[in-house]
Image (tube, rainbow, N blue to C red):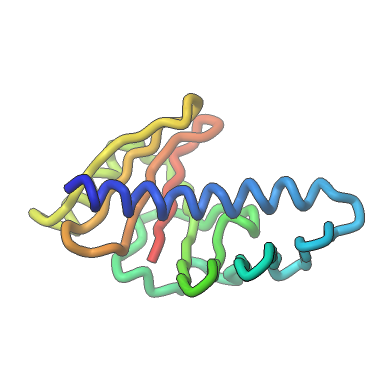
Amino acid sequence: MGRKLLIVLVVLAVGVGGYLIYRSASNNSSGSSGNVQISDTGMKITSGAKSMDVQYVADPAKVNYGIGIYPGATVDSSKESSATAKINDVTITYGTFVTPSTADAVLAFYQKQMGSQALTSSLSDGETTYKVVTIKGKQTPVISIYTESGQTKFRILK
């Protein structure tokens, strides 16, 4: 079970890390900085032999995440919150959604969808607590649920 939690944490770190890199790079007024290239459709970051290529997903609600989207949820409006990221040889697609429901209601929905194989954990970055649920024995889908500015948000990773 410790290995599965590690996988969940790595997947979350990739999503959050990509977003933070985007925010950091987008603060550069020229739009690129040596090994960072930003466009309206995504960004590419290279460092030696390592690279990260992120392309924003135009309609995250149409992506097949391998699990349904919480009923009544809407797509998060910021374009960088849904993307396909290729980090070296690993590709991850994620979509971020917003709902008026509570984080506990969203968690219960996904636990029910995953059945007896659901693995649930919580982690905090000091400001936000994330509730994470995935299927035992599988790497995806992973759903991270959190509250931001009084809204329940969740990110589905595949």
